[in-house]
Length: 448
Ligand SMILES: NC(=O)c1ccc[n+]([C@@H]2O[C@H](COP(=O)([O-])OP(=O)(O)OC[C@H]3O[C@@H](n4cnc5c(N)ncnc54)[C@H](O)[C@@H]3O)[C@@H](O)[C@H]2O)c1
Image 1: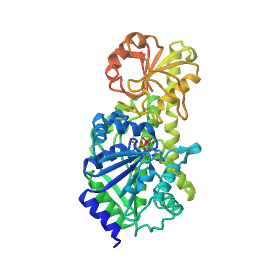
Image 2: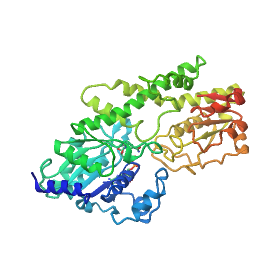
Image 3: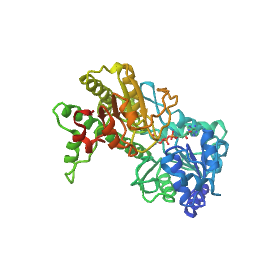
Image 4: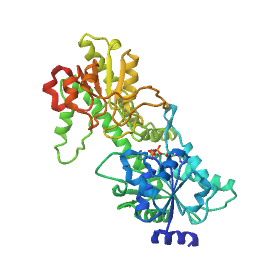
């Protein structure tokens, strides 16, 4: 057996291992913290100078993770952070947590994965374990990621063989920012290597910081399992959203229907309707598979249909708002509308892919004057697709009363729903947040 790989195993066993984590965002930061917490020495790598600065100074930049995580890391001798990728060779294990977004036309953008692979290749040495964590379609680790590593190694004149000199695996992140019941250390971790030894050693590595590690037979199984998890959610959410629209016209409340069905103790998992999909994963990852499916001559019909249905939800919300205004004798183009919640889900400051932006743009396209209120997002900024140029409106009885309609897009628990019920002229509720106020509000409450 290769001596460098035996040494790697011994380092992992003794927890004297150096773990490099590339990409210190929603996924990389808590992962770095989990492994550091288990006793590993961690070097964080990122291209964003603001994150390097924050982690050096001990200031937090992801509120939902709490202050302690960053201050503990910044104050530890076993933690270091850098944007110098020349230092990747110092790490015995390199975990890659960079973005995997979509380009125009829902085409996977693997440029971050490929660039990172090349950078790793440039300093590649015998005895390293490389693990891709970024969500992607099956086959990426073996083809695109390893290919980029080998390219980088070749450019740097390093001749090393995968499986003999260094190891490669895939292990999907299953973060759900803001969820209180689970955290990185308690979410079971799937691990699939390019070969048996990669799976075994990568599993040992993760056991340093994660309670339950689940080895699978290949990187491709681990990649596909992650996509299945996200497709499952996208499809089920689309199904309840579609059913909500149908049942609404029959005068039936979909939220009550889901709760009723959920009393069945087996065979049903509750998914609730909403204003559309948000977040980094569910609106994006399924299309990684549908793109790859097309490449090999298949159509991923469930994924495409779920995409269509979920994409139409903000349009449905705006139509409902416009017709509720009309019923009150007010054209949408003359209305003042306040959208509650910019984040894509309650109690987080994450706005990625949030349907609230689409709702605001569509209301503006109708001619309405639109503002928003979100305690987690004080002002909007220029984004790839949106540049709203708004600042959050403070919720007071007066501010609420000054709008013709209030649209609840995200049900943050910090909102005072009693005040909203009392002082709003009209509430369009996409989240069932106003259920306790149904009788008090009467026709001033519309579900969408
Ligand atoms: N956010 C989630 O809840 C979640 C859950 C499961 C899986 N994922 C997946 O994990 C991956 C990372 O997502 P995220 O939410 O952590 O993204 P993020 O945007 O929060 O973090 C990515 C980090 O990578 C850095 N980065 C970008 N290019 C880099 C490069 N070339 N080298 C080094 N650093 C670079 C960015 O500065 C950023 O800090 C994605 O594939 C995503 O689909 C995310």
